[in-house]
Length: 266
Image (cartoon, rainbow, N blue to C red):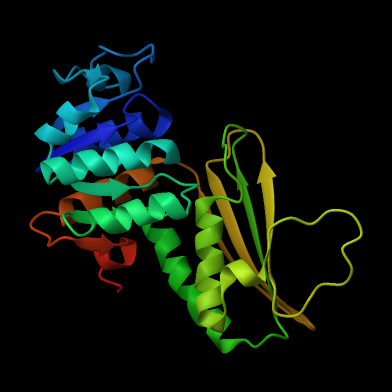
């Protein structure tokens, strides 16, 4: 399968290149970066700490989409619309791990799913997706006497908060409780906030150091507390999940999918 990678010279991009090169049945079709990136023209294998692979980082994203069966996108929300356009134009499947997506990006992915297979997830790791299922189940079993709080920590360079994965845990908890997350989320607390409101889902965000990603869903009741925790120690888990999703797209009918579908959990 021919796999292209956008944002190929970034931290995740290099991990994706390494994983793609080391995965049987995968050919690296190309990689794109922004026009002013200092690593344009560099061999992708060299960027990933491997032997040269004969494919270089280029600014022409369209060429990458044209050459690939599927493109993996870990870039920024602002590029989603353009990448969706290219995916639809070239009938290229799309795997999106970019976080911080808003309503416009979500609508663009929905539109693309009419033409190509689109796999989008806030987190591509197998462990996180298993924990999402557990969060949904626990929230459905425990009533509102158990308060739900989601705590996440990432490295100092992360630009969005709460993380996409934290919000995914919030959505899973809300689904378990049969409530709307947007209407019941406390994403910021500051000053004299008053007592905690029953039924709300709280978020706490920590940033610092080189933490890859840590998430804990807390169910706090009277006299007991349940905590579901996932700690990532390497970005490789996200890259492996994304490449697994890309391979899963082979021959897939157009549609909007998530990692639960990829892992056979849907």
